[in-house]
Length: 370
Image (cartoon, rainbow, N blue to C red; front, side, top):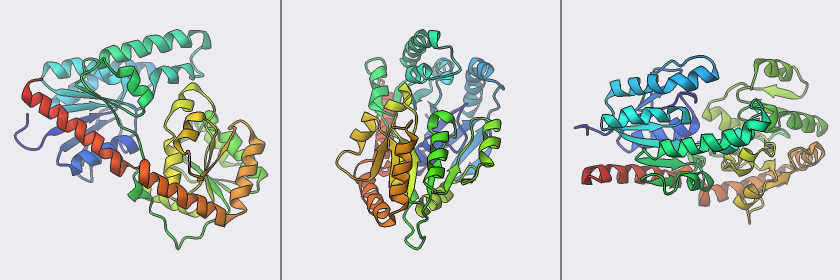
């Protein structure tokens, strides 16, 4: 172990360097708790808020990245001489073996349910999806057995790993309440917004059509799935594309709208996912119009803070947009209830203790020789 602060190398070959879960929540929480954190990523070198970033270039193309990134990241991590390596992508799991041979503790962070994701990937031929999903899930769990600790974004994901590793801890990707402080002086517009990945399966065309039918401006923020899609959407009337926004800019956007949209299509992965965008809207005091999935209804049970719709029913979505943009008092009341719910149950300020507890137990087990 280091003689000074425990050194944690955080590895991602897929996510942006400022990913919300990886940087804003986990890396910053570790740094604030006294760990020395180096974040290896594919795009940026520098330092932010006590976290050091190191760029590790990856091959272009999905298959080349998957096949070769783990070795490049393993070598780069070993050069940093960390005490702990925290891996965030399935393709990096083979790096666990050379890292452990050097006595480095390894942590895997399962953001998504990989088998469910594969079942919903349109670029994978549908006849082979079930077999590929099973094979990928089996390989993932087997490789994760070598990790000292596994964090999982949902209980469903944790269930895949339980009994196969030394320790499995659910670590929900809840919003940081302090990031979304309401600004009372900002008047609400009769507009709706969506921030996140911009793609058809996330309801992009339903949102545009429904907002237009409701005569409500639609603000979009995030990255488009393709350049062609971006060029098509940005010229549509009634749509304002704001680009990729920082956390402060997002909070300002949420503060001025009447509702946030999260109408993801009913793919296997989305139906069971923790709806982070939905929770962020509520944290900002913004009511949500969201997909009517049973798991999402259960999440908000007992609190009237959202409107649930069939994500493929543009007429129902239009009706909910009209309701909340046409009654800003109702919008504010629902938003206040939603923010209170997040503070009571679903905020990172509470959840971060799970992260720190996992690290404490990991180090205690190392010291005791377990």
